[in-house]
Image (cartoon, rainbow, N blue to C red; front, side):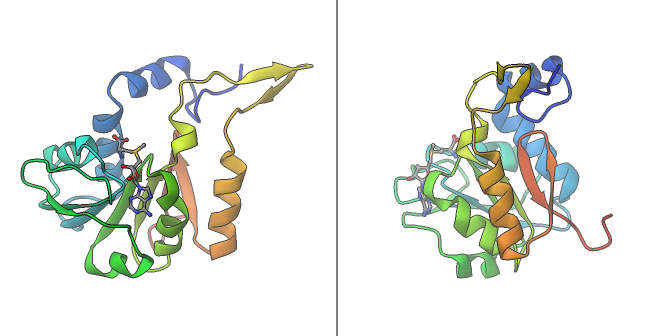
Amino acid sequence: MGAYLGFSSVKECESFLRNRHMWFARAVAKRFPPAEHRRVVDVGGYTGHTAQALKKVGYRVVVTIDPEGERSPGVALRKRRFLVQDAQGFDLVVGFRPCGASQKIIRAGKYRPVALLPCCCSKIWPPIVVRGKTIWPYPISGITKFFHTCGVKFSRVGPVFMTRKRGDA
Ligand SMILES: C[S@@+](CC[C@H](N)C(=O)[O-])C[C@H]1O[C@@H](n2cnc3c(N)ncnc32)[C@H](O)[C@@H]1O
């Protein structure tokens, strides 16, 4: 059986879908510990669910950049589009379904650690099997290709793309 949303089991995938913002924040914190990455920018944060989850797992300074963003307790809001150069003001750049900002987040990976869950990965769509071949109904290959084009090394944890830390295999 093929993996679901990049997870190795349906059970793991279901756990992600039940509590996706916390799941994402925990996965990010495991890879980029809050003690070493104090200032985080949540790109395309909108209602602030991801920002709140990031605060819960221990990130001290969380800023949302989103032209449609809403105020959320303890989170600074910059109501505008994210620019690649914004990354330099932070220790970590994250995007959870950030719509049009995915490419900029990937480009920011040249300068700062990045964790990205592209919009297309969070849809609750099962893979389609055509003539025995499993086809993923989201353009994961486009995201992968863009990381390569930008020369940004990454690995995946379920549906989340995270830049590799120096020294990672
Ligand atoms: C699907 S919502 C994601 C909301 C939130 N991250 C979540 O999953 O709960 C996408 C958000 O990305 C924002 N967005 C789109 N392009 C952007 C850009 N270039 N810079 C910052 N935010 C952007 C939109 O305004 C929208 O609020």
